[in-house]
Length: 140
Image (cartoon, rainbow, N blue to C red):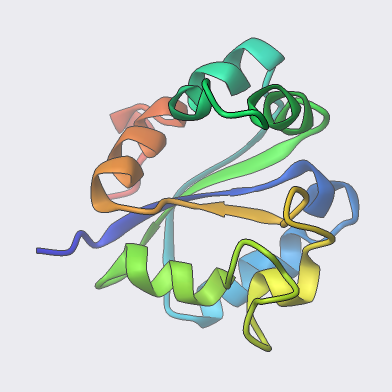
């Protein structure tokens, strides 16, 4: 059964370029309810913990450096079929391959600086949301 919650981050590039408001507006207009949100900045160590699943990949260090390069916005979103619907809204990892009107098509600069993170499974949505938010920080 699909979960009704997913996790997202507006990445440092989109935050720095002032696109956070437009991205959040698109998220809400697509029917997602924001149930937890915060602006923060990851240290390289925390970025490494968050992306530990990629530790053996060649891009891991660059990813950690990039994700700790500036502020991000972390959020937990709620909607029926949240993970799949959000993945559709954000578009392909490579913005050149993303569908017209998706967040990445509109705001991403490259595969690496692709504006937003979106959980790829219900299990990862739970893990990733819990990384940033305690139960006290969730709206019921």
